[in-house]
Image (cartoon, rainbow, N blue to C red):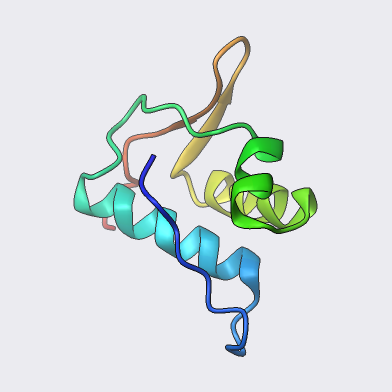
Length: 84
């Protein structure tokens, strides 16, 4: 997975930065449908954030239809929602 850069001093919450970066990569085609994302703990460790930050980012993207949880496969990219 490509590197995510977080701006810790900005006014934008870290979970929103993570969600936004992933959303952009999905919409641009860098992350395609079916691509597995790192487990929450692994991504949190790599980014130096609390696991709940990643859980919230993934949850936002799931609610918007960009990600889905698959039993045995973890979290994967969904097809971008229509009109995005």
